[in-house]
Amino acid sequence: MSKVQGRLRVVATPIGNLGDVSARTREALESADGIVAEDTRHTLALLRALGISRPLTSLHTHNETQRVPQLLARLAAGETLALVSDAGTPLLSDPGYELVRAAADAGVVIEAIPGPSAITTALACAALPVSRFCFEGFLPARERERRAHLASLAGEPRTLVFFEAPHRIAATLADLAAVFGAERRATVARELTKAHETLYRGTLGELARRAAEEENIRRGELTLVVQGAAAREQPLDEALLRRAVQLLVKELPPGRAAAIAAQLTGASRSEAYALARQHAPDGSED
Image (cartoon, rainbow, N blue to C red):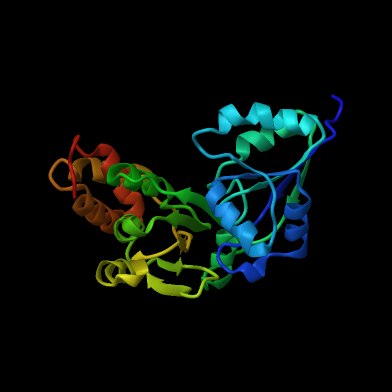
């Protein structure tokens, strides 16, 4: 396949503090034939703050599939395009994957201009193990789907990173405490690199109570870092756990059944809860 003459630059932009704009980022934005932006209004404000004026094209969740062919045509004509999201590194819970994949398939040169990311910024100051981590993006908005997804992650040993909306953080922390166990440690990173940056550290139980009581933790951009599951010292008798759960959920709500099954078998409450949700009668709630 012959290479297309154009170039696609994937450019990280500040997550808050404009001082994080690197010389490479500025050059990439200034020299681009056009900038492909998640929200052109947001990016226009950034460009004006930097004293840069370039043509803008929107690329978001609702138009990416339709917009890719015309962007590929521009790249084929030799243009250099800069892909940006509203904040941080593009593609990470943001649009752009379809364009980057299509550009790679077409032989376009793709260049990353690294920079800010809420994921790595939160990990750096969370005071939790970060040698291995797993980014999960946004959790499902509905409680049942959210708890089911959390149950699938309850045994994950790597540190977990989530994005969350301010109006859902209290419910999400409560679900995390219920599914992972209230003693698991976590950090809520709020408004990273901005004037009101705040880090809330503690157990999931403590953070859930704090989110229910304090308004500030429910404001602004939020990144949630949760410590991974501890390694089990003794092998778990999974057959015994399953039998205990199946018997208990016939008589008790899933949460209570999980607590008793965990005590009987030595399993973590999160593992027992995940099974209890699977075997509970339809519609059964804690």
